[in-house]
Image (tube, rainbow, N blue to C red):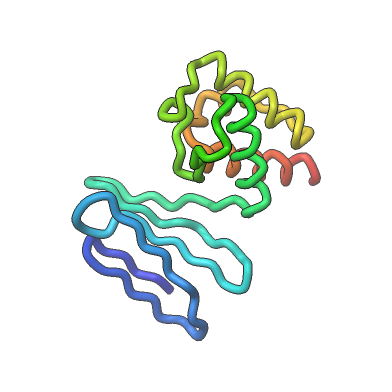
Length: 138
């Protein structure tokens, strides 16, 4: 069980996961962990709200990063991470549509317009893809 506060994180379990803590300003902002290759939800806290989000598989994230780089014609040395926002990478609305089309083609899925409008980051895209691929396979 993990408990999270603005300034500290405690994890009490029978195993020892690796904790990756990231913060953009003072105080704890997010915590994520993995155990023997398995990814678990990320926990993040912002003033006035607490959010738990699923993390996509590293393979999915890598593919999404590659598609984003290709669609935006970014230089090889440009860092595209799960937290990268499409707008910050220079994508306009047409670029975002093209990214979604590339993702649909690569993963053999169809993204509803409502869902596509919620995608702002590489992580958002990867999480949605995994959800849709899982839904398709059932």
